[in-house]
Every structure is written in C-alpha cells, then in structure tokens.
Length: 327
Image 1 (cartoon, helix red, strand yellow):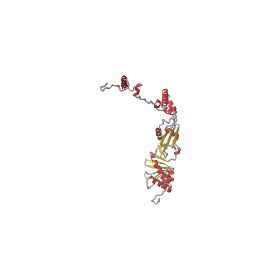
Image 2 (tube, one colour):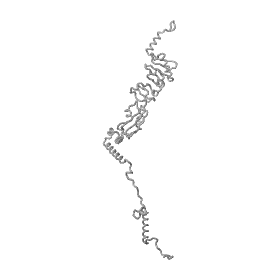
Image 3 (cartoon, one colour):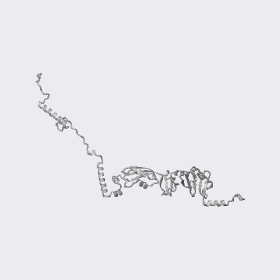
Image 4 (cartoon, one colour):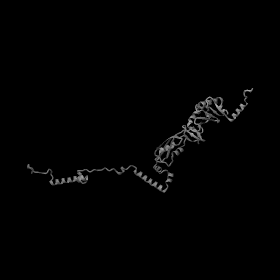
C-alpha cells in the first residue's frame, strides 16, 4: 500500500518472477547479438531477420566455350610438345604449315578460295606467289596488311586491297601499272610504266611494239619522248627509238638507221622542219647517216662513205673558175 491508501500491483498480468526472468532473457539475447552477430537460435528469429544470399550457378558465371577452348589448348600444347621433343616439328611445318594455321584449318577456317580481280598483265599464279598464299595457310591467322604490302612490292602492281570473307575465302583487288614503253640501259631491256617505274625485264613478246627509249634516266622522261612521236606526224611510224643524250636532248633513230639530232629547246619545231624536208626533198631516202637540226636556220647532214666519196669525185671533176676554166 502506498501513501494514498492504494495497493501496489504489477502492470502485467504475469507473475513478477516470470516478468523478471523474461526481461533477463531478453537482455542476454541483446548482449549476445551485439557481440556475435545475428543469433541462429529459434527464439531470436522473432527480433532479428537473417540475411539470405542469392547464389548464381557456376555454369552461368563461366564464359561460354571455356571448356572447348581449354580442351583445344590442352591438346595443342600436348601435340606441340610431342613434336618438339621428338624432333618432328620442322617436318610437320614443311608438310602442314605452322601449327596455329594447322589448328585453324582443323576447325574449318582454312584458306580454300582466293578471288582476284583487276588483273590483265600479271598472272594469277604470280599474284599468289607474291602474296605468299598456299594451302598451308589459314584464313583466321592471315595478316591482310602483310599480304597487301607484299603485293604492292611487285612493280607491276600499283595498289592492292585485301579482305577476308569467313569462313574460308580471301578477296584481292589489284590496280596494275600499265606498260607504257621499253627502256634500254647498258644492254638490258626493261618494260616501264608511264611514270618511269620499271615493271619487269622485257621477256614477253606482247610488248615488242612499245616505244623504245635509250639512255640513263630516259625512263623518267618517256612522256616527253612520246610527245615528240606525236609531233612527228606522218613520220611517227618511221621512228624506231629515242636516245636521251647527256640528259638534255633527244636523238631519234629512224627505221633506215639514220640519226636525227634534235635541239634541247624547240624539238617539236625541228621535227616540223624534218617533215617538210621529207615531203619536198625526200631527205630520208638520201645516202645520209645523220641529220642535225640543232641549228634553227640550217640543216647539217652527214653522208655515208659512198655518198661522201661520190661527192668528192664530183667536186674534183667540176671545172674551177679562173685561167679560162669555167666552174
């Protein structure tokens, strides 16, 4: 009973001993939880929720085809080690190519078809040889940039484009240099392009009718010689070659062996004079070894030995003026 005449009673309906006991039990659980983390007892599950982790299956966490790749790598390593230790690696490479190319061919990535376009002068076999392509190469490990660089080292090929078409096709597009003239230097004959690039030795009869230039660096001035041929007009077909003299002027070789010496400046005008002389005097039919057109207001000719001897005899027989003799 308190001072107001009231009896003291517990606020709960449970006996006092039970209340104390449960309070004590809760305090113990709280103390235990803060020390060791979440309680795993059934009684503590009412006050604390347990965290559940969502596990991802191992098969989903591994990359696709990992097993296949590891298997191929294992067998490749075993094969390579066996060949190397047995001394058969060189023989294997000779018969089947590099190991990585051989493996790529086994899985269907071999080089089975090569499509070549843009060729007219060069042969397909020459393209394949220059590119280093054969049945021992695989498409997967083929370096298209290296193939393109090898092709562009061929003088006949101006540019090349190379691309892969999986699983087993390679497409090559070429831009060829066109044979433009023949160039003779030190007794050797070359086929050259319009820019003077040497394409190849003259070994093909298809090029025998190309214009011929002779002399040091004459290949680099072949366009100039071709322009002179056009300026020759009706005499173009009678010009067999052009020799570059001292890198300054041209001497034309005619079909009858006669030399026509042109000036360094005004060569087209000199050719116009030659056309006129041939039309009016048939100078190319004379017994002349050379015609010199380097002087603008005159023509100097060099006679053959027979013509020179006949002219000398004619001059001896011709009477001289003076002392009653007419000349």
